[in-house]
Amino acid sequence: MRDDLLPVLACPACAEPLGRVDGGQVGCANGHRFDEAKQGHLTLLPAKRRALTADTPEMVDARLRFLGRGHYAPVERALAAVVAAAVAPGIVLDVGSGPGTYLAHALRAADGRRGVALDLSAVAIRRAARAHERAGAVVGDVTERLPVVDGSAAVLLDVFAPRNQTEYARVLHPDGVLAVVTPRTGHLAELAEATITVDPEKERRLHDSLTPAFVLRSSEDLTWTMDLSAEDVHDVVHMGPSHHHVDPDVVFESATVTAAVTVSTWTPAR
Ligand SMILES: C[S@@+](CC[C@H](N)C(=O)[O-])C[C@H]1O[C@@H](n2cnc3c(N)ncnc32)[C@H](O)[C@@H]1O
Ligand SMILES: [Zn+2]
Image 1 (tube, rainbow, N blue to C red):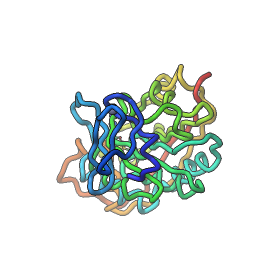
Image 2 (image 1 turned 180 degrees about the horizontal axis):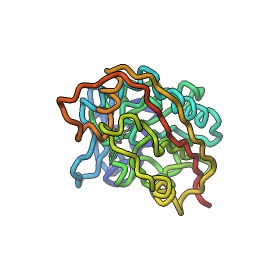
Image 3 (image 1 turned 90 degrees about the horizontal axis):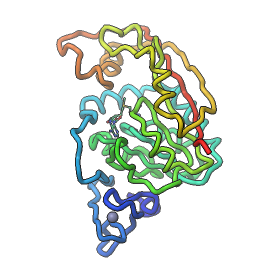
Image 4 (image 1 turned 180 degrees about the vertical axis):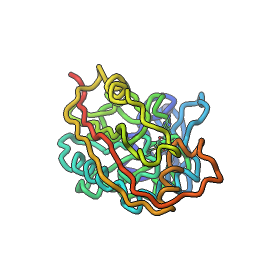
């Protein structure tokens, strides 16, 4: 973990900022200590651990391959534009980051800004630790108090990931912006048999999940067509929750597939 990122990270036991302590370990002023993994990330989970719902290695590898082929480039560009336009001081925090693909794109578009990827999956965070030289990576749980100092994020990214409005409002700078990507009805429709269909109430649920702490600032629907090889179809099915439900014997074929997502931006309510 980069030393200059430690002061924006908070101890999961007592919420004090982290720093380097004697012997080069990471810790807080109250004596709590955290080991860095050899890949460079930190695990900052509260002591009482929940049943883990994190992505598996197969899912993370499928996601890295699929996103690495640029199929979701419109999302990468939209998020990079939000980060490039950000005015508040602070980091880019990618919650439910997976392997950190979107964070890396965003940091490339934002001169000198630093970032933190946070995900419950240690496998994903190991990949995210290498996503960008200005990024740190943390195993953490979005349903708990986030291990991030109050007001320290200029931009918070949440791409197809669980949300926590109270914690997002706490860690965002008052002039900060939250960017959320959610699937719309029709997303991956051609693969409906193999993937989980999008809940038609998703838009209302998005709104309910972020108000009253946030105010909607913008909402853009992005729709594009992807020419997917059989391997791409395999990967897009296995990189998400459908991984747990798909028949392991199914043979995938190439397909032309619709992507339909909403990119919305939100600001903290005053
Ligand atoms: C559909 S993936 C999206 C990953 C990434 N944002 C992307 O679009 O490539 C959802 C991510 O949320 C993570 N996740 C699930 N529950 C979580 C929790 N309670 N806290 C933090 N991350 C969680 C999963 O491990 C997974 O990486
Ligand atoms: Zn502490």
